[in-house]
Image (cartoon, rainbow, N blue to C red; front, side):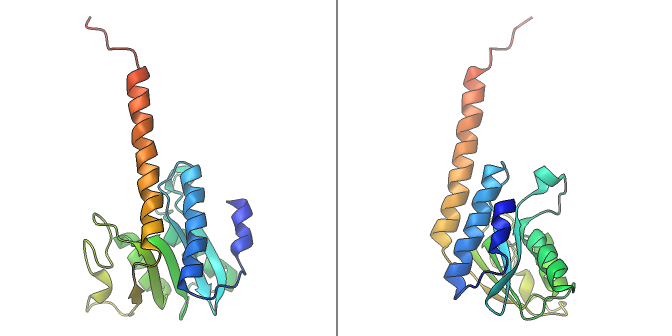
Length: 176
């Protein structure tokens, strides 16, 4: 991901352009064997933080792309609060990431594809609509959804194919 650090400071004109960059980060995750999710934080049309899904490589269950991008942005701007900034992520956030989004005061989340099992923006739950939240976040979904979904589909298709190859290559278990 070190060569992707060049994305920080890059200007983005709109949601589609930002999501294209998030897709680059997602592909970097896939190359590392992690579920391909990419995220970036944008302030005033400039990328201020990036992240890709890294829980396996970092041995950190909280190292989701959204959290990594928020951490990166907070360190770069020198504040744990990121008001008015936009988080772009290729896949609908999970509950852990939704909590981090609220606590960091991100103003807007733009995601690509839905996540039916664990997505909490609109799929498994509507977390950002909860009355108990002390911060409201604007949510926009479906930006470059086909491309974002395609990256996930391809990753899991390759993973399943690899498991099948291993299974066929394994010697049969002895019956002793």
